[in-house]
Length: 232
Ligand SMILES: [Mg+2]
Image 1 (cartoon, rainbow, N blue to C red):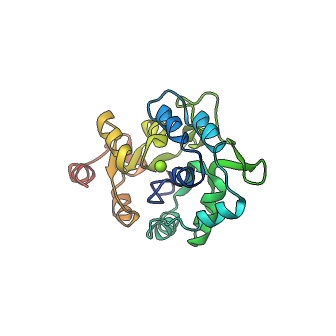
Image 2 (image 1 turned 180 degrees about the vertical axis):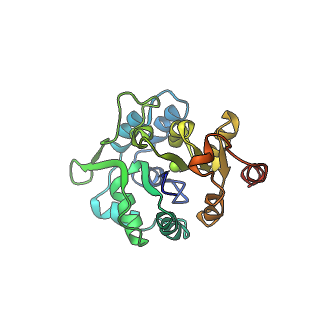
Image 3 (image 1 turned 60 degrees about the vertical axis):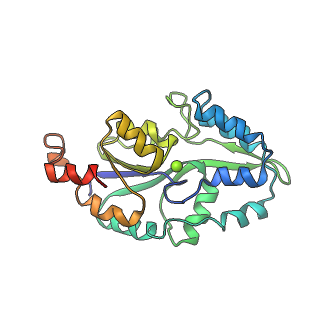
């Protein structure tokens, strides 16, 4: 897989839950939910959404770290990382979540050295925070905190692994998508080539069926592969 680059979402994809939503439920004023609705309806981008929501959080660093340590990941993710890196692919965790939380959670699960491209918490006071967006782009069509499209390298085939709204933009330009939940529905509705999955344990078998780069532009899938991708 030397010619493949994998853009892997974090919240809801590597984890079962959304870390920021869980932080907001636990530590923020309930008005965060009305802001979430504005984002889900497309009235604001995630950059504005997250800025406003994180300003509502009241939590000390100790409380946040203890909270990150309660988050479970898909138990098959670490083996999947070893598998794809062994096959020669590059993989980055590209997330509209919080870099420090992702790093803490992955390290606790013995996943280290993976690049993490995500938003960054900055402490303002004893228990107050703001969120910075080192990977934002003014040209981002989705006005996201992290413009996932911007991170995809030129000259490589791109495989997106994700579950939700923050993955939809980059999925549209990917060569293939492994999708859960709302992202799978979005791919289905929009004719984006994808395979549905629930666990990273399923992905090595699906990876083996990805088209080789040399043949991919001319013969995307044979009948057998099409069957596999559309019925998982
Ligand atoms: Mg997600």
